[in-house]
Length: 260
Figure 1 (cartoon, one colour):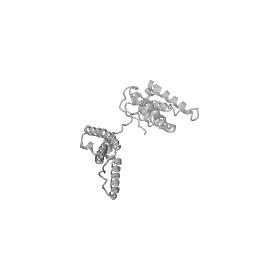
Figure 2 (spheres, one colour):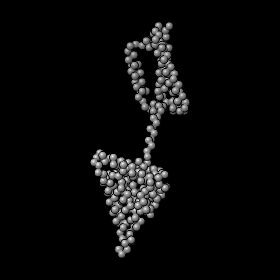
Figure 3 (tube, helix red, strand yellow):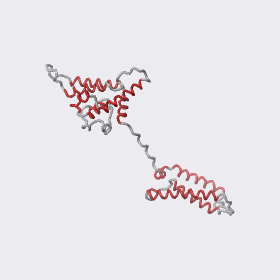
């Protein structure tokens, strides 16, 4: 028994076309609907896989006839091979058709991040010198707000509402983990800093310190706004909804400026 080489040749060409379609060569998505194109690609992949098995089996038989290209002169074989290599390279490395057909990589699922932990990380990222500079600026602003409009009246502050809030904010900023002195030398100081961050998270979950709530209530209204505005002084931005369930709903932000 033998296989006619012409049949094997054209069967191989047909298999090559199927594998080309299955691997994304062509313009199926623009010619057919996405669903139809996916079905064609699936069938092409299956038939191409089956055909390679048939071709492999057929190669085990000897042919008793010459193949369809056997009559070509030797000089014609080289350009045919070169053209075949060029065409294969174009199909293999052209990204346009493949990019349209191959499945798009799915973005990695975002890891769940504890909002308060992110806030603590942002706070820890601020240098102690920077926070100290902000404290000095708030102190200067408080000096202005505390200026007496009537020297004979020790309660005639220029801005009594702001003057009640600024000292409370200074006290809170000075309580941040990186501001407080740590006795342990580096790298052991990281252990202390870690614990202080936990303490601050626990404090926030329990509610803002009383001095901060009372001092800034008239200026910044609710607890969430007080917290957001106070951390905004050192450039810590808190995203919308990050404090849901921790404080009552925040009022629209107004008042103190934010530092980037």
